[in-house]
Each structure stands twice: as C-alpha cells, then as structure tokens.
Image (tube, rainbow, N blue to C red; front, side):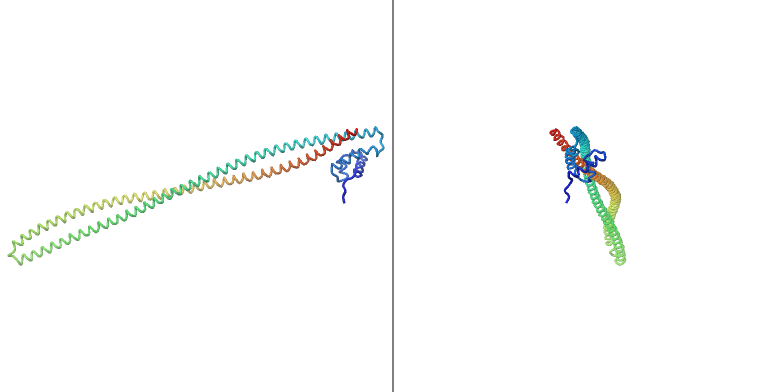
Length: 336
C-alpha cells in the first residue's frame, strides 16, 4: 500500500540535485521522484533545509549562509508566485470581461431575434387578413356573377315568352281574318242563291243585304282596328324585344367583365400569396441562422466559462502555495 512521499525520499532527491550542481526546488525534487504533491514536497523540503547543516556538520557561518540561501530561494519563489498570481488574475479579469461582453452581445442578438420573430408573426397575420379579404371579395364577385347569370336567364325566358305570345296573337288574328273572309264569301253565295230563287223578295233582300253589308263593314272596321292594335302591339313587342336584347347584351358584357375581374383578382391574390410565402420562407431561414449563431455563442460562452474555472483552480493552487510560503517565511522569521 502506497504511503506517500517521505522525508527520506526528499533527502535522497535533494542530495542528488546538489551532487549535480543544481539547487533543490519543489519542481526538481518532484521531477526526480516522479510523484508527490507540491504542498507535501514543499513542507518536507523545508525540513531538509533545516536539517542540512546538521547533516553536513557545517560551521555556523556556513549554516547561516545556507539559511540566507534558503531565504533567497523563498523570496524568489514568493516573487514568482506573486507574479504568476497577478498574471492569472489579470487573465481571469480579461476572460470575465470578454465573457460579460459576449453575454451582452448574446442578449442583444436574442432581443433582435425575438423582435424579428414578432415582426414576422405580424407580417404573417397581415398576410392572412389580406388573404381573407381577397377570399371575401372573390365570394362577393362570384355571388354577383351568379345573380347576373340568373337575371340574364330570366330575361331570356321573358324574351322567349314574349316572342311566343306575339306569335300566338299573330296566328289568332290571321285565323280570325280567314274565318271572316270565308264567312263573307259563304254569305255572298247564299244571298246570290236566294236572289235567284226569290226574285220577288229582291227589295227586301237588298235592304237586308245593305244592312248586313253595313254591319259587315262595321265589323271589318272593328277587325281593321283590332288588326291595327295588334300591329301596334307587335311593334311594341318588337321594341321591347330589341330593348331586352340590348339589356341582355349589357348583362353579357357585365358578366364577361365580372369574369375577367374575378380572374384578375384570383391571379393577383395568387401572386401576392406566393410573394408573401417567399418572404416568410426567407424570414424563417434568417431565424434559423440566428438561432444557430446563438447556439454557437452559447457554446463559446460555456467554453470560456470552463476556461475561467480552470484559471480559478490554478489561481487557488497558486494562492495556497503563496500562503504556505508566507507561513514558512513567518516561521523562519520567528525562528531567527
């Protein structure tokens, strides 16, 4: 079982250094032994120097010179330790300042990234509102188009009904005129037969004929008036038909314009949506890049903190050595 470095080990190593013309130091002794903590070697090396005059049977002046040499070695070690500690403290301060600056930069970048994300969310909400408004306009346009189509269909139905009614009226008037003519011709033949058969009643028949002719003329006048009214109605129907056709043409033009406007609105909405989507994709790429940069800064910060911890460990070890050196110096001063 290993018991650690002893005074005998320190003595052997220090004597070997003296034999080689070198000054025994903590590092030199540890190098020869290959083991031993600096504190333990330093403590045992103090005992070595204290027992060295007695072991060598040196006179008092030489022992004094050895003690002075030891004090110089101690002073040099304290100076080196102080300088190393100051350097380590300065490096630690610089590392802490650098870490604090990196932390401020990271916070600034994180705030900027959060603001960018908020702006992108706002752009996305506005894009959704615009898309909703475009959809609403498109629905209104489609509804208006359906309404115009319904009105056009109704107008066409009314036009066909008017044409059929005019045709029926014309056919009815033609049939009535034909019937009246046939009736007049039959009456004339009947009267001529009666004239041949009943010459004795000629005068009476002539009077009756005249009365019937007058009535026929009156009836014909009535028919002519009816025909004139029918012609006027026909002209009115034709004018109404022409007006309806013009209205129908206007409705068709409006329908074509509405379809064109609807197609244009759909095209513009699709282009605007594609442009917004491209902006959103670019913004997402920027956010991902910022997140990656933030992760890298976080890793750099962690590495700096680990380095600072190492430096603090080294500083603590140097502080311990310095404290031991101060303690030894005070002890030697008291011993003098």
